[in-house]
Image (cartoon, rainbow, N blue to C red; front, side, top):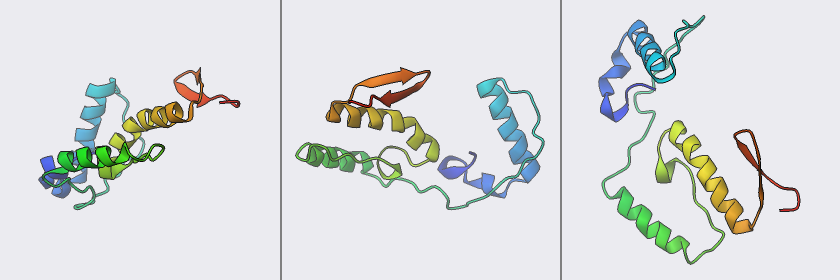
Length: 119
């Protein structure tokens, strides 16, 4: 993903420049050298919202309220990460919290944790 609040001008960049930047980022992050067979840049000028000033304080208040409601869990882009990447990154943590609450025992298969049938 390119652009957003930190680089709002990226939305008007030429497609070739955007693809080139993405390839450079993939090369740096993953060592990926292969060129794509097909590429396409999709632009959403207002695609990812931004948190308002005071968001962290709001989250703290919400967390305080949640302590009075055991078993109620909140997740998603409204709370701890606007982008899809951030939501995916937090998913395992949220699943572990729910499993801990339910008392479920985990079985680990590779990098995927699964709850046991009797847990």
